[in-house]
Amino acid sequence: MRLLAFLLIMLPSVAVSGAVRLKDLVNFDGVRGNDLVGYGLVVGLNGTGDGLRNSPFTEEIMSNILERLGVNVTGEDFRPKNVAAVLVTATLPPFARVGGQIDVTVSAIGDSKSLLGGTLVMTPLNAADGQIYAVAQGTVLAGGAVAEGDAASVVQGVPTSGVIPAGARVEQEIDFELSGLSQLRLALREPDFTTAGRIEAAINREFNRAVAVMRDSGTVELSIPETRAPSTAHAIGRIENILIEPETKARVVVDQRSGTIVMGQEVRISRVAVSQGNLTLRVEESPIAVQPNPFARGETVVVPRTIAGIEEDAGTGLAEIPEATTLSQVVAGLNALGVSPRDMIDILKTIKAAGALHAEFVVR
Image 1 (cartoon, helix red, strand yellow):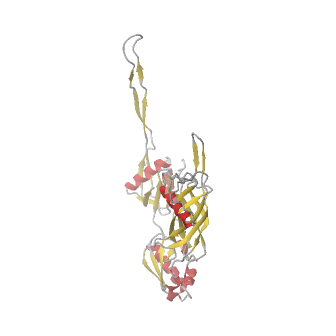
Image 2 (cartoon, one colour):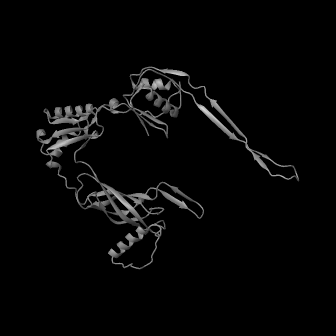
Image 3 (spheres, rainbow, N blue to C red):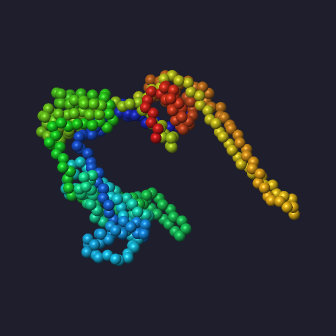
């Protein structure tokens, strides 16, 4: 029997390896990052900047920066090749304090060919409310390379995007007081009623009283006063390492581009018979040139000639997949077909359409 050549990942893996920490299953209410964005200028490029005729916004921001520095460029015609307009993005982590540093990502928005060796000029970063929460500046570390000559060029990676580690300094804090919460909501990353019920029971066991209640499949609410903890942070620290065994849906995920198949631990297949075969269509063009006799009047004529044929493989015949109650039995039954991963994807689709595959089928 030929082994099934596809990537098999156990989902959920925790069903085999055991329970996982609560902090890996939920997000705590208010404990989240905030997205920041800014528009800036990268200078010091080695002739790989924006073409200012195609990117007039680069010239505009460059003029504004120079005028703020006391350089009057009004009416001047300057078109340097070493500057590029960029968008700067970052995530302000929860409870970030003034003076802290965060990483930023720098991406060209003009026709710059590379940001290698460039330096980001001081750029304010705004949140969704329009306020400035950080300021970014520093040397860009681009992740690609460019080599070009007069007639050809080679690009490896993406040199028009890079990062600045610890490139932004926090200037304003998010106005959120965790200690002021009397009720803390735990949002499950994978909503499930069974998992939420287990979280509720585990937290109540930890405190030996009813301090948590399941509101729905994605929310468990914790009463901070009932925990008798000194603060909300103390309560979170006490529960975040509680071990929970999560329950997830049976799921099959396939990637048609790479032929990857991922099957979950809870996948089940009813008894079904499968026959698989391939058709090969072959079309060959062999045109013939017909020429007139020497010294005769006439023109050369090309006569089309096509050879077409269809070949059908013998296939696997009709193979029976018995009813499977475990993942290993499912794999053994599919292995019996002895087909390629891409053919296996089509077989799984058909089994699902027949109602014999009892799992969520996701195609990417």
